[in-house]
Length: 109
Image 1 (spheres, rainbow, N blue to C red):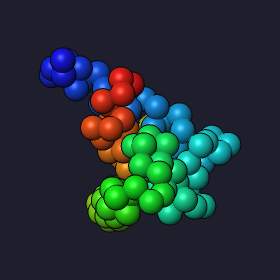
Image 2 (image 1 turned 30 degrees about the vertical axis):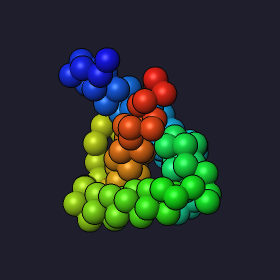
Image 3 (image 1 turned 135 degrees about the vertical axis):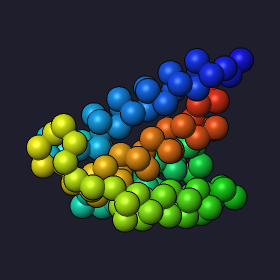
């Protein structure tokens, strides 16, 4: 059963994973700033589980792209890691959103 503890643990897990998979300054990562649309499409297809052609695929891409654009406009660089940019923070935030989606959390991260 989903509880506040489960939700909090999921959020923390997604945040920790985002720091490992979205970080071009550390030698790459799974999701690169050089291809944000490709990264978002991959998040929709692998994390959220919506393959191309699924009725929710295009809408999920739109939601994540809008989130990225909004986060990119409002986040700042810095943080605890040298070289981290607002774009990196925005893509990490987008990853966290996809990671916390009902389809991703529902399969039991």
